[in-house]
Length: 141
Image (cartoon, rainbow, N blue to C red; front, top):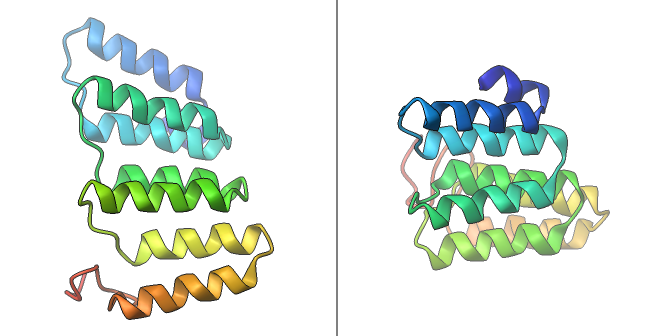
């Protein structure tokens, strides 16, 4: 599945997931994160959103990697609005945001040509005490 993800081959990654399930192999958040990564490599925002919805239907909670990858898909598409929604959802669900999350959001702003918003994101990050090498709690990573 990792090879499919690295190649951005969402269809093949899905086939691997289905085969895992057919064989009774447990599918967990890491499996879905790999599928989400395939969506990111393929630049497929809609499919990435569907992966998150599928996880939720199955009772598999996303983690910071899930949401940061989803945000990356949005960032690569230059979709700042969706990237912001992902951050808001993380906060609503109590998922700790980290420096990667904020850097991804700044990347979305930059790709959309919105330097002012990127600076606002940086200021927000600083206000929250999230600096390079730390998480939202200020602890070294």
